[in-house]
Image 1 (tube, rainbow, N blue to C red):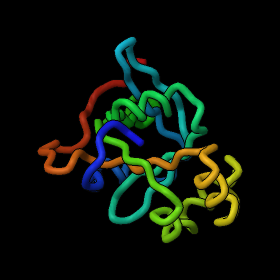
Image 2 (cartoon, rainbow, N blue to C red; image 1 turned 180 degrees about the vertical axis):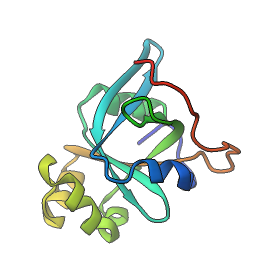
Image 3 (cartoon, rainbow, N blue to C red; image 1 turned 30 degrees about the vertical axis):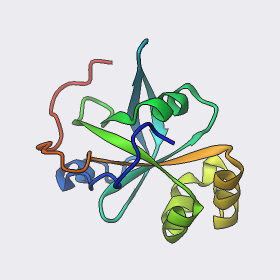
Length: 148
């Protein structure tokens, strides 16, 4: 689990979510004491306004998020970026979203609800919900050029 348990993250700003429409990938950053890493990732958006990421459990980013829930999402091509937090979901929380998640993550092996459930229950994948820190006063996306 990410380092910070508690209430789920708040929904992301609608203006940022509109920038994701029609896109297949986001640039996603994680951090640790040694620095930051950024990778392109497939994503899903589901009500009430969260981004979902599915990642193998044995990746460096997954390990970073176990220790620090901070995440930065960037729209490729110099679009807006937003800082948020991740929280891990188990199958019980993912099941109501299975239709959206399996549509978006089919090529990652989660083509059916049963496959997604198996991945989450056996621990081979982590499903992460991205939102704003509860009580955050983040104004919305940070505009600016993507500097790599």
